[in-house]
Length: 389
Image (cartoon, rainbow, N blue to C red; front, side, top):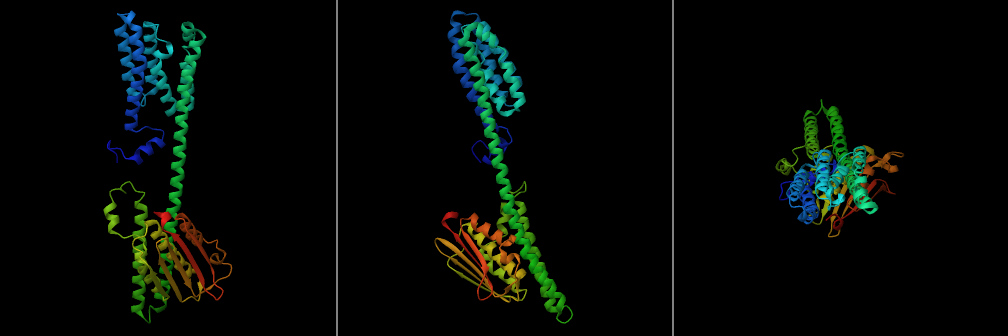
């Protein structure tokens, strides 16, 4: 938040909608007022020296134009009409002031109207501003007419250029929203897919031993409950980022640890609860990694374990190795299962593999996945640390 109390992202959002923030509106008023006072005010004072009685009236009219500019963002059409009438009055009182100079405030308002109103409205206003052209020709000849029409056309064109800028900002904002939603969709997929896979296996195990081994069935049910609570917690963290109170929920988010390599053992324990042997080996310091790399590495491991549960037939062991070095983080997940031919895991077209590759790409890394010659399936990712800083 800047000293004016306006957050930069709020100002950007207002500008993207074709609006001006209060700070920008004040800056526009001060700038346009200074331009009118310095140019038109000086011309009036110089031209009014020979018309002592008319000078005070002309000065009042100039000041009225400056005051009207205060509302040019809220009601540009009304302000333009008022400035055009007072400008014509100034020119009538002091013919030595050119018509182009007398209508300077109206031209400034035309620029603002062209930027914030529809093309149809701005074109009509442009045509209305051309109506005094015969007066410019009568007072200044061809030169006066050319100068006046050029000034009006430049004011309208400047507004259209600003309008094009606003359209570009809106397009960039929409594209950023779409990309962010795609990332969120991958987050939701990773969380739900992994947790549901574990819950399905746990439910099947509980059903198999419910009568003979009730205690083991209870453990499976407790694992299902824990997994569901964990998934709901992570989903809340994701959705809270889009809520209106995201800024005020920062303390609550800090109390709930998010996905991280520091929680790798918890992830492995949930998979071990299905009966699969999971070996985790971490080398190097993983608690000082950039957040993007840390999250990407965790999600890659999570998705690889999910693929093992889903697609690796007869798999009973999977090894996870994370090596953190100063330049990069290497993640390797290998299982001893038999991948079913024709499945998405072997073709590389599954959403899980695509998501893992996209996560690696987003942090500037790379990922390869495929079946091993001696059996099993390997996922290996290399995530650079420096690119994410």
